[in-house]
Image (tube, rainbow, N blue to C red; front, side):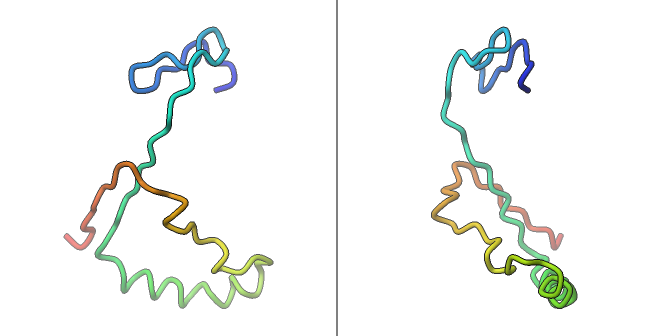
Length: 81
């Protein structure tokens, strides 16, 4: 992206001739997937012993809290279908 001749975002030219020409506010997209809660619980139970053994950062520290996200657009997905 650093060598882009043009970059167009939401119809606005934001990079022209490799230089930033306009800064536009980004939108956050969030996929709210539901229907795999039991499978997710099983996966976490399976990987947690290895995670705790080999990773130096605790699993709980990887979470991105909702107040940092403030999603502009939410896609609700029912994966159980």
